[in-house]
Length: 329
Image 1: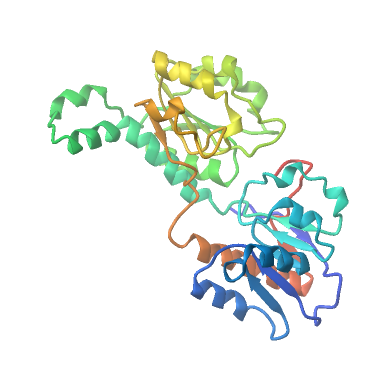
Image 2: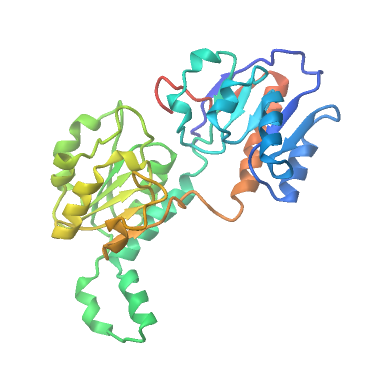
């Protein structure tokens, strides 16, 4: 299934004229070479890793095309910019910028890019909780054999009810993985039934609640203290979307009281998570530190996505994954 959103963008100058690109993503030499090979001999590409911080801003300000999440004021001050390719799926802080100031700039993101890796992280965290991996690692470190004493506390995924918030690439991929383990999966969407308005009736039935939503006005604090309290006793909260989805203090209360069995959190309200935050101390919480999108060839594959979009831009063809800031993704 494709998650691309295509919008046609015409270069404001003839495609035969030189183009200046600024790459804010730090790349391996092989990935830099791949990008340079996609350009014409008259095009210029400047790489952040080869420049001082001051020069980075200068070169960014000269660029027609930027690849990477540059500071938002660099965008605001660049009169040459026509296309910004983000190296993220998330839109912070760009969703708080007044894009009517830069109507000529098209923004694309990596919508759908992180689906598999985020889904595998969600599944890994759930299995770690269900199969007691975290305490087993502690026992191994302490050279302590507990064996059969741990068995009654373990769980299996088969037959569990999973409620996935969001049906984009991350949500659907996570759902497919859970279905492969025998879960019954229900997706909650923005516009198709069941919708966000049905959460109050769905939360009490779910053994697993998996957040995969982007941050929008509609999703901020969607799982507030009241809604979190509706979750089934002994259920697990998973969040690989955005930390703003849920009320963290309320979640901590439910985890410490035993109402919730555990949580897998890739994202938190504040990142990096402060060293004195209570989430670090909870034995039933797995923190994956916003790494769920990562994998060894991540940068290589990002460059391939950018090059494909770059070829479309050069030819005046539709770009993939153009952001609709009115929708928030």
